[in-house]
Each structure stands twice: as C-alpha cells, then as structure tokens.
Length: 166
Image 1 (spheres, helix red, strand yellow):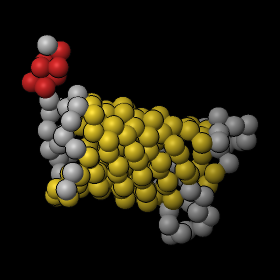
Image 2: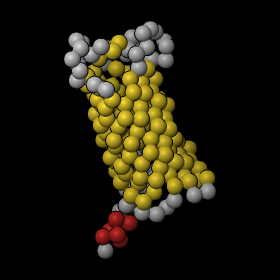
Image 3: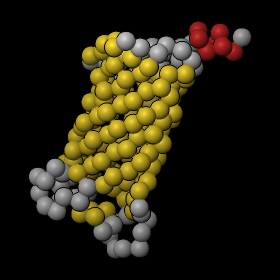
Image 4: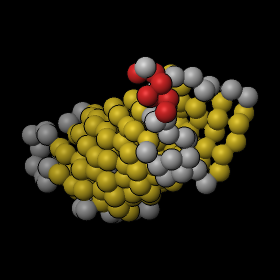
C-alpha cells in the first residue's frame, strides 16, 4: 500500500526540485538551498535519461579558522546542470555536471581573497533518486574568478544534498 501511495504521488523529471545542501573543506563550509527547474533540453540515451536543467542557488559560506578576516559571505548563482538518471525503477542513480556564475556579497572570507564578487562555478555530483520524488547525493563545487583579476583564490567544497521534486 505504501508503494502505491508513493507511485501515485510520483513527480516527473520535468518537475521543479528543491535541494538543501551542506559541505565543507578545510576551515570553510557552505550551507544553502537550490531550485532545479524543468529541463530546457532532454534526451534518452539507452537506459540513461539526460536533461539540461537551469538551477538557482542561494548559500552562505563560513570560515571557522583562526586567521583574521570576515567569517561569512553570501552567494547567489545560476547553473546549467546536465543531469543523467539511469533507469525507471524505485532507485535511480544519477550523475551531474554543471557550469554557472555566482555573485558573492564580499571579496574576502577569512584569509581568502577572491578579488571579484563575480565568480564562475563548476559542479560534479553523484546520487540516488528514490520513490519517484526524493534524492540524496554528493556534489563537489569549485568557485573562482577564472583569473579575471588576481589573486584568484578559489574555493572547493564537498557537499551532501537532500532534495524533493514537486
């Protein structure tokens, strides 16, 4: 009976999804929310379904080390995320790659100096979609100014994500 209720309420891959995430690396962490919109392109490649989704994100970076400097900054960004989902069962593995742009609320965080509030972002992730609606996963994200100005002290994070489609 629980399986039929989950199947009846299952969302499609074209439906918007919301994810909460948190991750850290060294003395830096990032917590935020993202909204993945329906695909602007999609195709089936055998057992894989590929979709290019716009994703909007808001987050806060935090520095917890002992060096001087501001310990938080806010970030807003937009990402083009290629997401590939395998199969059509109750548990579907996925892989994703994304490129985007972000705006930071300041150019420094602890000892890091980003030089520009505009940053490029790159993302790669793996996870599982389940019950036709939910997902859990891991995502690696890199933010840097792409050498627009120096110094170009980027930031890298490993994040845990949980999400749901509507």
